[in-house]
Image (cartoon, rainbow, N blue to C red; front, side, top):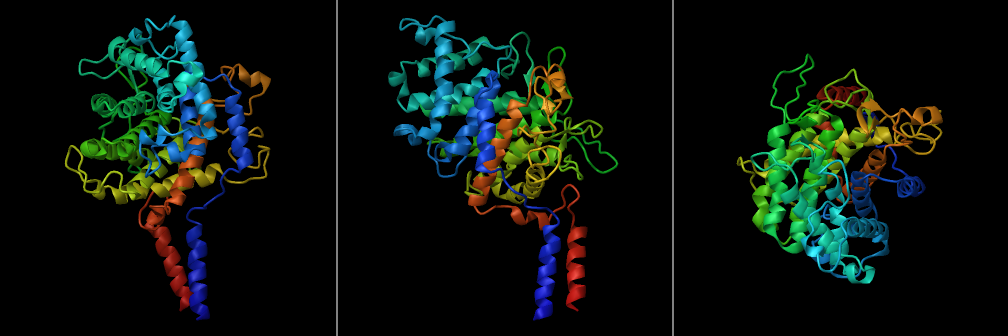
Amino acid sequence: MRNQARHYSLLSLLASAIYVTGQNLSSSQVNTIKSQLSSTDLQSWEIGTYSQALLELDTPSWSTLTPGVSFPSVAAGSSPSSLDEVFAYAKTVAQNWTVVNHVSSDNASSIVAPLLANSAVGDPPSIGFTLVLANLTGRAQADGVAYADAATSQLEYLLEGAPKTPDGAISHRPEQTQLWADFVYMVPPFLAFYGTATGNETVARMAWEQVKLYRQYLKSNNTQTTDSGQSTVGLWQHMALGSGADEGFWSTGNAWAAGGIVRVLGTFAASPMSSSLQTEQADLVQWAHEIQLALGTWVDSESNLLHNYANDTTGFLDAASSVLYAASVYRLATLLDAGLPASSAKSSDGTSVGKLVSSVHGSVPIAERIRSTVFTAQSSSTGSGLAHFTSDLALTPVVNPLNWGAQLQLPATETKLAANNGLAMSPEGQAFVLEMQAAYRDWVGAGSPGQNAAFSMRFGGVSKTILAFVVGLGMWILV
């Protein structure tokens, strides 16, 4: 009996070496990151991303990524104070829209303009869900702000004012027709949210249509493999069409796309229209996981992080895209575990959701490796006690969000700020950290679906060979 106990103990010890669970951020550390972002002059897409992170982290009972939430009925009652900062952003943006567009009671419903003046078509809509949510809670009258008119104005600008491809893909840029993977996190979730909130299935379905079109333009079908068997099949180019398009497989662009697709899926699943959108939901599962599967093969086996451009292993490592990737994996696994959508739902090509579950679970160990690496405690020169955070809790290493080919120089001393475009941190990267923290918490709360996939599938250096060695050594000791 003692030998048997030693056998199981050793198996547990060695198996745990395959990946380390790692710690999470403390509430104090989370509050520090939130304070950083709250006091930063954020760009439009950063406001939207941070607001989404706050919703997931602080008010999961209102997030459509939480299984069991019914939207929009969840917003029928009074809103909790945990949403105050989200609604503060909504109010500021709507007030700015009112001033910039000279809105009055006579013309409010006829204005066609983005929520914020911006160099991109696709970025301001990322904030749109906050205005829709604020309007649903009845805050418009109390705040004296036309939330519904502002959100509708943004929608109409996308539909009427933005350039489009001949087949209807909305351009991310205003000066030319150009598609960016980033768009999928910003625009389709807004379309899904707006359509669901207003009971307009046509608008809601546009979210799926835009993802479908963007996938057609950006997804790689190149089957050529590297010496290690990796390929770019399933990865998305950063951009397509227009002049100056970055056709590389930017990791953050891929993570943006996967995260946005999962958000649309969550909103469809929480919607009264869910039963009539089963095929669309199955497509979204397939498309999100397609990116996750492709991107996961490029996670570096030593650092457990993605490179800035997924297939450029000579480039710098990027923790920002890595944590957003991990968050999307946890979210998709959690939704599928709750039967959202039903396992019997079939995608446009006839693939049932049930057939995808085990493959989705196969990405979970990769997310766990990333999370445990990023949150690893380390008494080092970083000063934060965490290996991948500076003393002021800026995630590192990360890409410069204003210059996607350059690494943000951290910690950001005065001499480095100029090279960083004035940034002392990556605001989107910090928001991604909060999203991963929330996604992991909810995944654990759901019973950690897919956790055991580490012992049955090979990903990023975790292989059956290691498991065989563990079992074999255990059997040798038992004998």
